[in-house]
Length: 231
Image (cartoon, rainbow, N blue to C red):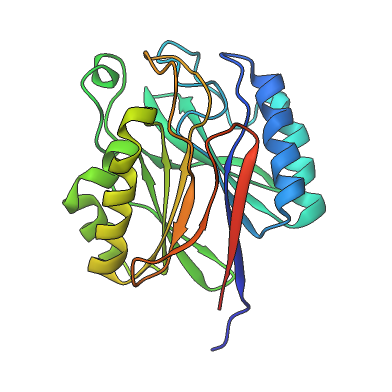
């Protein structure tokens, strides 16, 4: 059965610590600008990497502007937020609303003081394309990519926060995952300062082909995005 091409973007919005309204507006702006079917955002993108931020309810009315933009352009936005049950999560936002799509399975030491690991890998179907989801440390655990890709994925979509000094780490991980599992890897990396001691984050969000080649890469500034169309 044939499937349409999939346009996917990785975006690094300007983020204001704890300010859901401002961050939703920044997300909505990038979804509209990218005009892609899927837009991937960094870890905890709705709150900033603020490990004491209040949990975000997917039914929160503050998400309405993002839902509306997704409806207008036909996009699925994968955004980061803390959620009830003490999880670091990916919310799937489209024209129908928002829902918790995935809960981070491998936590950093400081994260584990508050949060609990998610139960299992998750794969989303978008127009016949299968997207496996990951959040930051997940990408460094070979078991995560192996279990996720074993479910049959076309794209491994990751949301991360990394320091500028460690910008090489997500590149190494993405290259390994793409070539080992022969999948597209889309990494949305935080840009700009945020909590958790990240005075300068890496940015450089990118999309890798199944052969490890870089299909698109953003710079280091907040507000950037890049996209690729998969056929």
